[in-house]
Amino acid sequence: FLEIFPQKLMSSSSKPKVVEGIQWPLVPGSKKDGDRSTTYSNKAVFKAALEVHSTEDGANVMNEPKWRKNYDKHLLRHVKTSIEAKDGAIISAEAGLKWMHNNFEFVRDGKSQPFNIAMSAFSSNFQTFTIKGEKPKPTSIPELEVPYKGGVLKGAKLIAQISYWMKYGTIEPSAGNAILNVLRNESYRDLSGKYFVLLGATSAMGPLRFLLNLGANIVAIDLDRPHIWSTLISLARASCGTLTFPVSADPSTLTSDSEIAGSAGCNLLTQAPEILDWLKGVYKGESLIVGAYAYLDGELHVRVSLAMDAIIEGLIEDRSSHPSITPAYLCTPTDIHVRSLEAKCASQNNYSIFSSFFTALVRLTPLCFVGPLEPNFGPKYTVRGKGSLGFDVDYYLVDGIINRQGPNYALAKRLQHWRAIVSRVRHKCAVSANIAPSTSTASVTSNKLFSMAYGGMHWFKPMEIFNQDTSNAVMGALLLHDVNNPKAVGASPEIALPNPLLIFSNGSFHGGVWRLGFKMDSIGGVSIIMYVVIRILKTVFLFGALFFLYKAVSKNTSPDY
Image (tube, rainbow, N blue to C red; front, side, top):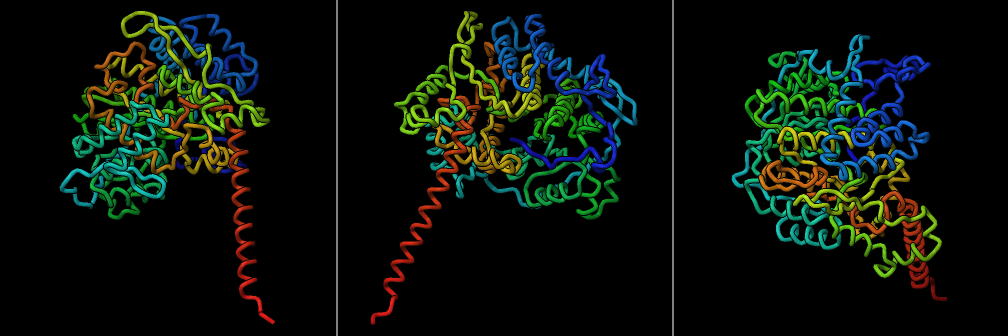
């Protein structure tokens, strides 16, 4: 769901892979030279997170013979123990983070050391460059605007659309009310005194453009590729905000934008220690909102997520440079979350054959065998745990995992959950960890099957797949709510939660996944069929209309003998 320009770790396919930067741990006792199996480390991380509550659960992870197929079952067990056990969420989070930081390796010039040691072993040689936007600051605070289906929603139209999304079930009421709060409070949209660090600034789902348009101060971290920085520099100059970033050359020698772009940037995978050291000296004395937005495919996603996590951890622990750090994440709906009883009941209603003609069609015809379709609720998704008053209450889980996304994606997203929990509970940081909707970014729609599935998912109430510009705006608004409202339930450490997993239950703009009648992982096949059928029907209708038009024109223009 997120995207930055992918980077190659090999100069060409014919040359050996260069091992540099953050690396997966070597497998103990492996007979294979240089064996850095991601399956071993995936298992070991979840074993660490589970065995703090149950040695049996930890052993079950390591003994799983089909990890790629069954990882989701162990992730579900991890979430359940985080609810069932006393302080389960924070203890599991700390155990998982500790294993990753202590066991992943960092390689520099052929020498390897534990990643947690490496993060304090290197100093930065980066210089700092800042570009101030050339657009005059508006005389009044800009309205909140959300691009949507070719238009722009604001004011009464935006209020009406948010109300519709809440009523239909596409978003949770807490998300809708948070966006309305930003719409109604001008002070939330004045970002001239806010400082945002964007790790992966060019992420397709990131808030860069949204924040610059509101005059924010951006610290951008992205790859050292001139074409990336040419774009960023142009965006900054056309805004009323500021853009600060690392450069490798003396800033006084950079006299043109092309020279600046050629010297700008860094690499999260290979330069995480230097990036952290540089960030400690940027905007000293100011509070920072640090967003982890970088994305890479496959196992690289875990490594770049760990790099961002170490940077956030290092900034939180170094309070001498910045009085407060607010970690910010875009969580995925295709994960296991705690939802409300109301959302669970909505799923049950949307599963009923009486809820809509389409639901009856897919449940009572052969379409039900494409998958098969599974209900988005059930006894195994109800977990007993402590409530806000100390009594045991039921927590209702939603399993939105799409198994084909794989265990590496699940681990990378779980890493973000763990850091959000530890930051809020142990360090009393505000956190912004809202769930973003399924979005038709270029990285997703480049896969034809995913593109077709997205094109047919809206048949399943209350699903809606959003365009990138819409997601950027609504998630940007939720970010502003979290960093401005001291009473933001999920974000503010001053608001007590019965379980830290509820951080992710508030402000969820899930796109319908939480109130869907069927499990997200089971609707792909039918969605593709619906997309193809509708395309065929539209094509038949178009050719039919053209044929009848042709016949009508031919009849009216034929010669009269």
